[in-house]
Image (cartoon, rainbow, N blue to C red; front, top):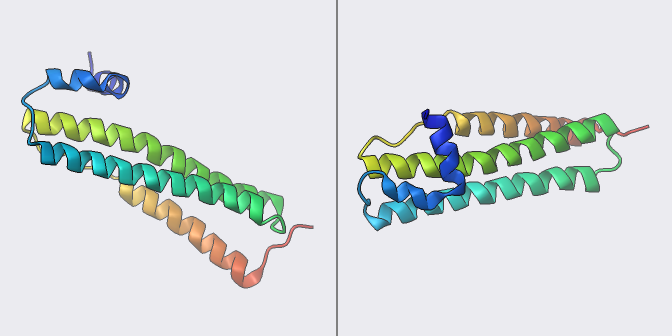
Length: 131
């Protein structure tokens, strides 16, 4: 079975991760869990921001409002999915005595948030009223 499918199965049966390697120092597992929770908080903030843009900026043109809201909502969904994936990958690596996995996701998320932020700056400075 390939690594991706096996990792995906661990999303729904995390107790099976104990079958791999040795139990790491609990401090590392707890740190991994805190990182997971930080990513989940970030996802919730992005989702909340997407709803806020949609609900509290009705004067924006529909396309602009929907585009900004959907970008934030999509980033939130991806962030939540990435959180559990990263938790599983790190936990497996620690149990196997391997290097922790690296990811481009933080960079991609930062770029997505920056693009939305620049769009919001343009809206604030120049307005974009819907007519």
